[in-house]
Length: 114
Length: 108
Image (cartoon, rainbow over all chains, first blue to last red; front, side, top):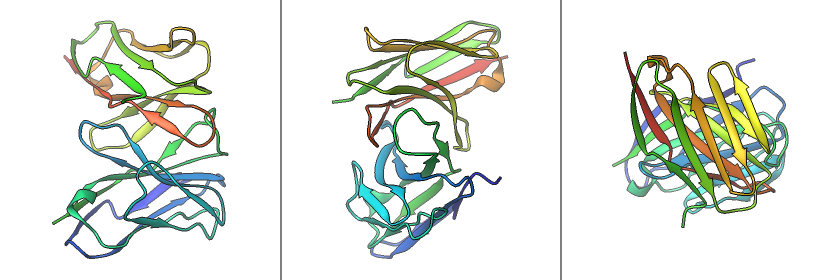
C-alpha cells in the first residue's frame, strides 16, 4: 500500500492563480481531511469528508474548495491564491470518522504564494 | 484560546537522557493522539489513548483524564528521536485540536 500520497511536494504560485493539490489514499478509508500547518500554530482543519459525495468545512475553509467523487481521492482547490495561503498542507485519512481512529498523513505540500 | 497546550516548546537533551513532553487540554475528549514529525515534514502517529498508559519500545504515553493531561516519555534518548512531537485531541465528531508541537533535539 502506498498509504496517503500528495502531489505536488512543492509549488510556487502568483497571487490570483488557482491550483489543485492532489491527495489519494489506497486504504479504503472513509474519512479524509485537509490541514494547513503554519509556524507557531497547530495543524488547522480546512475541509473534511466522511465519505464519497460528502464534504464539510473545518476551522479555516475560506479560499478553498473540495470535492470527493471517489473514496480514494480528495483534491483541495485554491480558487484565487493569496499570500496568506502560503503554508504546508497535509492530507490525512482514517478508517472512519470519529476521534478514536488512527490518522494517516500524507508527506505534505509546501506552497508559496508570491 | 488554545484547546491544547504543550510544554516545553523546545527541548535539547544529551543522548541517553530520559525525556518528558507534556500536553494539557481544555475540552472533553474521545481520544488523545501523539504524533511525530521529522525534519522533511512527514507526520506519523505514535499513540492513541483514551485512558491509562501505552508503551512502544522506548516510548511511553500516559493520560490522566481527570486532570486533562498527558505525557510522552522517551527513555534512553537517541539522536534519531530528534523530531517535533505533536499532541492532538479529538472531542468527538470530526474535529481534532492540535498543539503547536515540541521540538526535540538529542545531541550525541
